Length: 186
Length: 101
Image 1 (cartoon, rainbow over the protein chains, first blue to last red):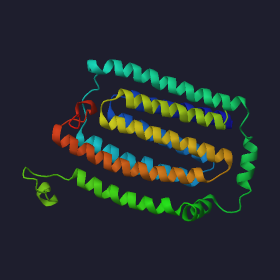
Image 2: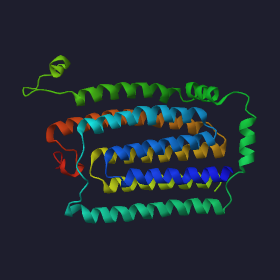
Image 3: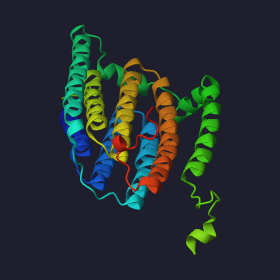
Image 4: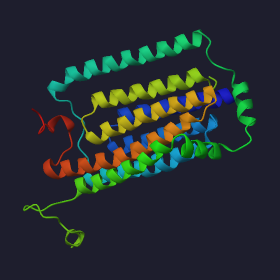
C-alpha cells in the first residue's frame, strides 16, 4: 500500500516537472511548478519533516509562485517560443549534455545501492518515534545555537534584497527623476 | 516502489535534469527562472533525503536557508526583468546583449 502511494507520488512529480519543461504557455508552466512543489512537500511529510513541508507550501507554493504569476501577468507574455537558427545546435548539445549528466547521477546512485548503503525504513522510523521532543523544537534549537551566524546573515541578505528589488523596479521619467506613486496612479 | 533513499535521490536527479533542460532550451527569462527554481527544489529534496537517511536534522535547516535565498533571488530577479521589459518590451535572454564585450 505505502509502495503504491509512493510510486504514484513519484510519477505525478515527474509528470508535473515535464509539464514545467514542455508547456508553451508560461502560466500553465508556473501552475505545473506549483504542482511539483506540493508533491515535494508530500515527500517531506513522508520523510517526517513536518515543519519543512509546511514552510515549503507557505513560502514556495504560496509566496514565491505568487510573485512569479504576478510578473507573468503584468508583462503579459503571450508570444510563442520559437528557435532562431543560431540556437538549434546549442539546444541539441545542451540537451545531450543534460542527459549524460542524468546518467552519471543515476550510475552513482546505482553504485551506492549495489554496495548496500541504506538502512531499513523500520529502523529509521523507530529512531524518529523514540524522540522525546517535537521536530520543530529540535530544529529551532539547532538553528538558534549552532546555525546562529548564518541565521543572522540571512536577515541582512533579505534586507539587501528588498532594497535592491525596489531600486531595480522603480520607474524614472526622461530626465532621470523619480515618478512618484501618486503620479503613476493618476 | 517503496520510499527508499535511492528512489528519492533518483527523483531528485530527474527533477534536476528537467531543470537543466529548461535552462538549455528556453529563451524566455521567466521560464528560465522557473527551471532554476525546479533545480533548487531538487537539491532540497536530496538534502531532506540525506537527513532522513542519516537521522540528522541539519538537512532541514539547510533547506530553510535555501528557501530564504530563493525568495530573495526571486524578488531581485523579477525586479530586473521588469526593468528590462520597460526598456525593450521583451525578455528574450539571447537578445539582451548590452553587456556584451
